[in-house]
Image (cartoon, rainbow, N blue to C red; front, side, top):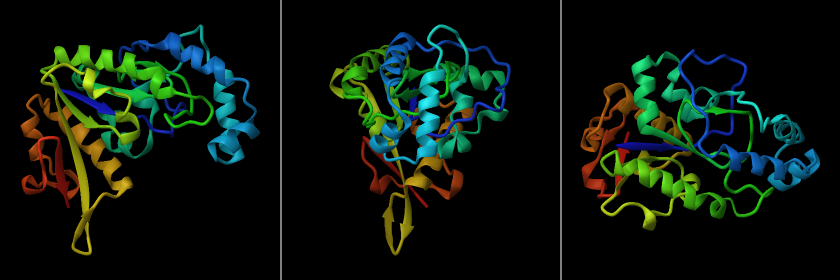
Length: 249
C-alpha cells in the first residue's frame, strides 16, 4: 500500500532533523534545471506573478539563488515541510522502524523535485504546480512521476492511498498506472447546519493524522483504514464509494 502526500509551502530549515539515514532525490538533475530557469526573476516579478507579498517574493528569490546544484546539502523532506498535514503527521517522535516504514510506503509530490521519499534531502524552495513563473509543470513531471509511482505500485500490492491535494494528484496520469490499480481517496467532511462539507484546513489536518495512523499501525490492508477515528472522524460507508471513502465528524 502506497501513500501520497502534497508538500507544504511552509518549511523549517532551522531545526535539525533526527540523525536517520538520508537519501538523495531521484530527479535531482531535473530540479537543478528548473531552479536554473527561475533565477532570472526579480523579487518584484515574483510578487506580481505569484500574487504574494514582497517579503515572500524576496525569500523565494533568495531560495532560487542559494540553491546548490552541486552539493548534497539540506534537510530530509519529512522534517523540512511544515504546515497542517506535516504538523499532524508529527514525525519528530518517529522511531527508526517508523522511518523505515515511511521511506518504503510514503511519497511526497513536489513541483520542484517530482517525487520525494521522506528522507530525501531537499533545499529551501517555494514553488507549486500552478506557478506563473514557469510554464507546463504538469507536462514536465507527469510522465516521470507516473512511471515512478507505477513501479512502486507493482511491488506494493497495486493500492494507492491518495492523501494529496487535487493540485498534486493531477501529476499522475491515471490511465498509465498499472492495470487493476486500486486508488482510494479518503475525504474528510465536517457537519455544518445539517450538511457535510469539506473544510480545507481541517481536511489537511486529517490527512496528516491518517498518514500517521497508517505508519504507527503498519497498515497494509486498506480496509483497516476504516477504523480511523483520530480527531473525532469516523468512516461513513453509506456516503462512500469504491474510489472515495468519506469520513465525517
